[in-house]
Structures are given as structure tokens and as C-alpha cells.
Length: 126
Image 1 (cartoon, helix red, strand yellow):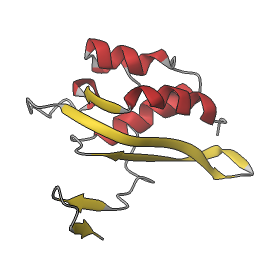
Image 2: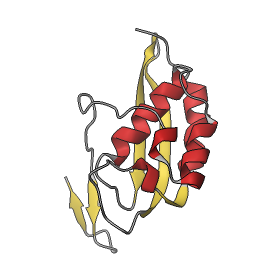
Image 3: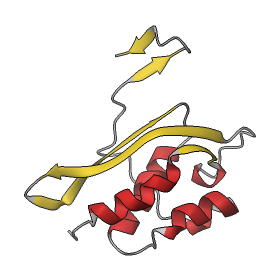
Image 4: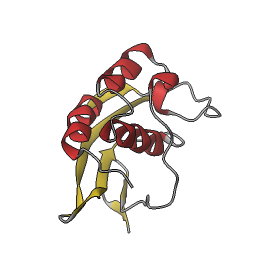
């Protein structure tokens, strides 16, 4: 397994923060017309200090589309491996083109940690 450049991944991830049209970050079968989403936090960090091949990517936002997080993670991994330039994130946001991004990460290893429902935050899961 190749080593990931976590710093390069985090630098590229910063472009995703804030409100953007994430149309390039949705699966091909997703036909919704409202693709504007807001990411509050995206953090790339080492999962283990002794192994740079592993990382955690934390994504917090107001809404997500089908496979959006998997596309974000796959693209960041491709950036971390040097297969994709960090500018690809900004270019995909600006040009709204999925083909500028990396692969879709497989679902294994990805999980939903928590979810807050409603504007007042009273309905939380888990």
C-alpha cells in the first residue's frame, strides 16, 4: 500500500469548505436539481501515528447527495497518492464536471458517526 500525503489532502480539502454547488460530487444516477450544499468541516488526519498509509477524513455539512462523501474521499485519496492535482477540487467545483475528480471510494471503512435533524438541533442521532 502506498503512503498518503495527508498535508496535500488537507490543503486540497480546504476548497470544499463553505457553500458551493456540489453537482460534480454526486453519483451519475442522482438527478436532483438542488445541488448546493454547505460543508462546515473537512479534516484529514492520521489514523495511526506509525502508519501514513491510513487516515481519517471527517466531513460535516448541512446536507449530502448520493455518494457525495465517497467521491470527496476518493478524490482526496487520489490527491494524497499524487494521482490527481490538488487544484482538481477547485476546478471541479468551478466547472461542475465529475470527470475532473478522482475515483469514488468504496463503502468499506466509511461510516456515519452522527446526524442532527432539524434547525434547532433537538433531534440528534445517535
